[in-house]
Length: 420
Ligand SMILES: [Zn+2]
Image 1 (cartoon, protein in one colour):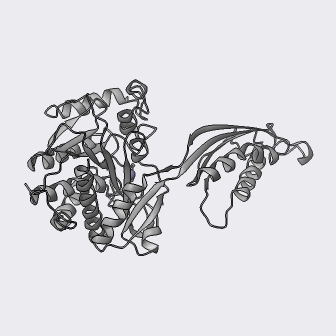
Image 2: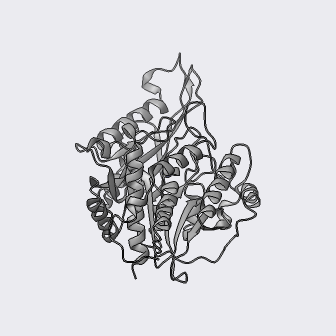
Image 3: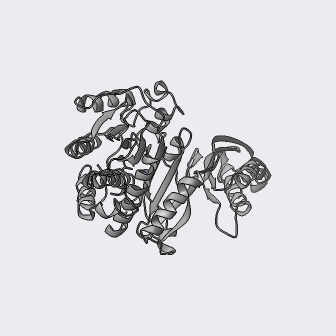
């Protein structure tokens, strides 16, 4: 056992071919005809992928366990196994037309990190546990980040069990199926607050590629406010009712969306404003629309900006509604979060020492790290993905970037696991 190591000792034991082979192999579970992956949470495809992960982990001496919401853990025991572990990982569920790397890369790079430590005989003080969180994507069972939410106490297990997919299957039934398939994997309920959590992920945006950087030290996750807007007008005959008497909910809704888009426009292109869902009632060609319901997804990395922008939404809607009535309901308010500078600095310093170009970068997307941040020091590392494309079967990364990310993760995880 060696403990007197310097930066690079573990990174150089990261094996690119092994990591890449496992990425290709895992992508076979739920592979789609167009080169993507359909491996939704708690599906048969995900169960098979879990079996493969457990097989890879146990083959190198890791101890598997799961919990009652099917989060999967593979532990490399540290010198002092009584201490709380450092968790590293992500998720292996995907969107229905997802790519090979979203989530899966973070889990397999975590496995590779630990294998590099084992190969060098480097045993950390604390245990390091590779984790695959249950249902990050939320495509089959909404909302996402379910496993990490229950693990960290943000949601109660009882609150998720009766959530059903489109086919009417419940989380309760499917958890039973998964845990039965993993009969050889012990279910451990008693859990320690982790010493730290690190998540490596593809950026899912174009910034690193545009800046020619290979590593992103993630500064935080931007805040998000979502709304449901009800616009109510009056149903009328398309041929007989003159403009002067109409209360057309669709025309009002379009005016509202345009007013919101103007009000939320920013020169620096930081604010994210999306109307992704829009329903018109009665949705008949010859009837003046009586009702429109639409969604607003508003995001910003700065809490002091997101608050007033979001607070202004109801008034902007009311002012643009004309003769229609409008009601705005806020559905969700997740303020921005900032990861601890100490972990971000370790990521940057490690990239520097390994001679890998890096930059600070905020996360536009949500991740399980949002929940872990509530209970332990948490950090995230990004690598580029081709053209910033993700949640898409065309998702693509470079082998060398995959290796660079795993190298930084391995070094930082080992450092954290040796810290007091
Ligand atoms: Zn993901």
